[in-house]
Length: 465
Image 1 (cartoon, rainbow, N blue to C red):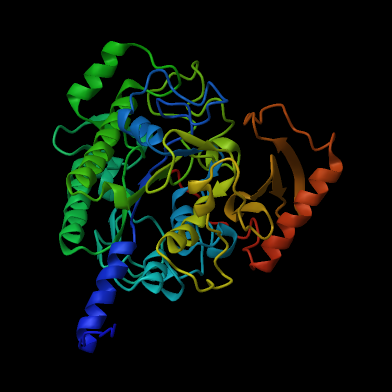
Image 2: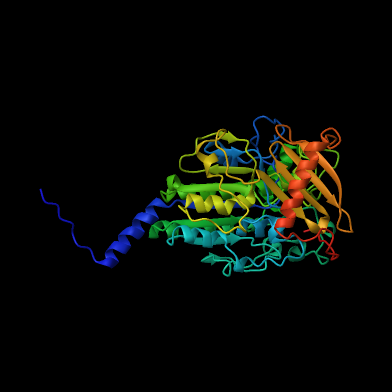
């Protein structure tokens, strides 16, 4: 028998191949909450740690995401506050490389970013960033490769004291919470735009990356009156947050649920990875919260602005193709791994530039509990020069390093943070000096190799945003 191959014009072949590539490439949604602590969910973030959940908060959609997907119990933000964390996520580089809280020479537009990495993997991708961009990002979303965005938005875009009628602009001078029955923390309108973008791409049959960076639960505390009254009726919270703060979190959860439902209604749920995490850990105190109750981040020590677990350990939930429902993995991962992971999921095979410090944790999505990551140093690095602190997490251990004003390192604190994440009164530095020395050497080597800003070099006033 003689086989014949029908002739197709080059244009038709290109269209056909592009269509096949688009069908093969998954959609990727990153939901980034703001200042949400590791234990500030209704489902235990680590089934081994009973206190890694709240009995007071209601987050049914986050719980659904966990039940339908994977919980990564040892997930970390790239930094314990907004600017370096978001800059690090965008570029896939540790905050030691891409800059700290106040001063950074890192210009994301001049480097590989998540949207550009996805286009490198598959030219059909369209990318959107909706919601809070961040403070001191040094590049706009458009300059960073996003096709659609809300622009260079900041905390003020989502409700801060000065935008809510507090003349001084300080949280301490305003009421503990505000009522907005239309669009508190802009959760509704950000979700509306996210759904519209997903719908447009689904109809065009284009793969997409969508980052939904919600303003909640960052201060100021803003919620609908009816939701606040619901929590007032529930009685005192189980930790040092307030009924109004719990209401704000539930309304954030509603927005997440609307987005998840939209993916299902558009028929793309099975082709879409949904990641949910926070830009940093929760605050150590909430306006109006009872200081006599458990800390808002309990059982973790510390909170936002610190490199203790409360400042950098965050929720991370993932649902998508091939992920076993209600699965759990304890491998340490960090937010600067997202770029490499998304690039891998999109089909990227060429090597990424050396300035990308993160690695793909895609193996964990298909084989939780057994897969190994190709992380050269097997360590996660954190650096907060304006606050004279650095940290490293390797294996079950974490080392905190303080810096002196003269640029020399000071005291080291060593903790074993898995399976028990508590740090308070559990410093092992004297008991295990060799372990502490090895981790300190690895941390100093990383800081030197990436040209990290010297700790204590900035003298500018640090804000409380």
